[in-house]
Image (cartoon, rainbow over all chains, first blue to last red; front, side):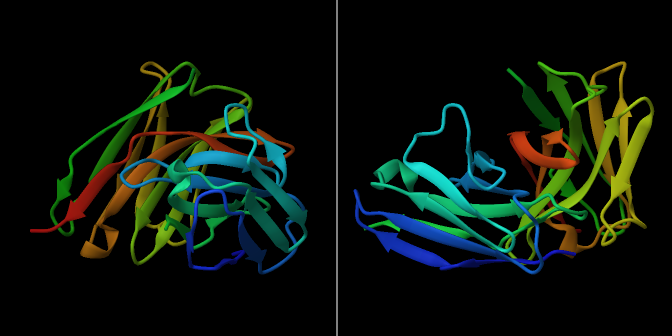
Length: 107
Length: 124
């Protein structure tokens, strides 16, 4: 099973600030890494696929990068509506696994 | 537009069977490019993938090793839905259960549509 770790666990950020979340895989997964946003009492929502590919309807301030074992989700100019928990997910091999999440709070 | 509508009880007694259904609209359970998945989320285990079913000239069903002895996932083409059964539940199976569609390309998949989630509590 491929273990994903995320850091930080929690980040409190001022609006318009830049947020960077890191996801590290226990072994190389190429670009089979996807990012999701989950707000309280909602289902996860796909933000980025295959490490860096954008999703239709997702604001352009969300971007992803990385390959192999190290990946980054960046939120440029954070908005209040971005308060949520962010998860990475690997689909390189079964079982599919998720990171533990990074909670982003608005100051 | 794909929508997944989950149904099933929110309370199950220990040792009994958890049963959930996910009705699909806007796509087909027999789709040649999608897989149909069950995922659960709890504070102690985070997001945990449980298994999937998909059709590629024949039906495939794959389970996570952590639940393989207790789980059954079945597609139902007549109702365009798929189901989850988890046997011999314990309080550790208490979680929010999601169904999700995964779009797959070259063997790599991402979850692009999720059901609304159902909190299932295992308690007597």
